[in-house]
Figure 1 (tube, rainbow, N blue to C red):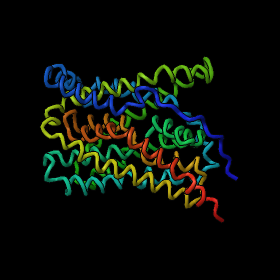
Figure 2: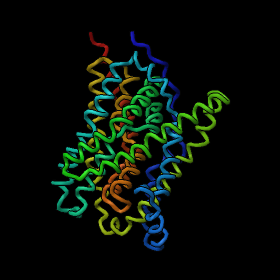
Figure 3: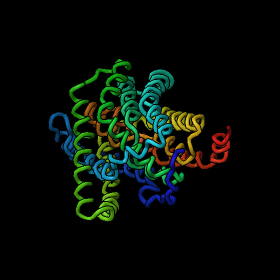
Figure 4: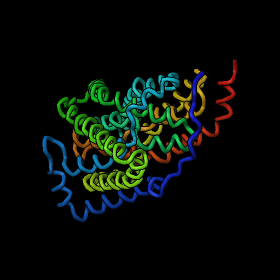
Length: 356
């Protein structure tokens, strides 16, 4: 019989997390205003590059990602064996469905439905940004979503560790394949560099830091550090957004509907992939405390990685960078709505899994 851990206490969003969409909107306004009033500092920051890696952005992204990866225990992957059906569904949706469904939605909406209303020279970049957004599953915020829906903590931790391991090897090939299928030139060397800089190096650094903390003070020391570093990650994210919108302010003020149009395929892919994972788990008679976080992990995006990679591949002022930033803007409200849907349908879900 499948062993399921007792539900964790309900997670509570902190002030910044709870109002993340508001903070993102404020950073957009601040970035646009500063970009208009003082463009020179933003241009100087944009030129601070080594091997096409923007140093200020790289520093901010590491501040975002490393504390998030500090939560991940790669030794926990063995714990998910008892929940193999839920793991199979999540891996299937994350890596065989989500990136490809986003590429299809991007092709439908960006190249066709909305194409007459979008800048024609940015269509490829918008599609590329959407692909980058969908090509990596969420690493950090999914712990919050799982807690809010009484998800199994061991499953969530093990699944995130497994996804991070897969991401090291699969992110670049999937992105390269989908960009090529979308007739977008693939700068393979730059893409490989992004994987090293924004996945491999942070994973190694976070795991070395984690081991030192555990060796020095055990789980209590790790918990204290996670609590201390959580605001750092979010502040770094918001600072990155100010930089991005400082470069893109003129484009956004000239085309305010672009953000709304880019949000459409993002929203559709979140609900499609969450619903698919949820229904597949129900068909496989997976317990709700596994199915709910499975649906959330299957739908959410590692937008920090997507933003950083878009900047490296296409630049600060590209449509790709803008598309990934729209993912940040919609992440919190849409994922909270998915949490509510899993809670509202719990009785229906359990009625289906209890049938013989």
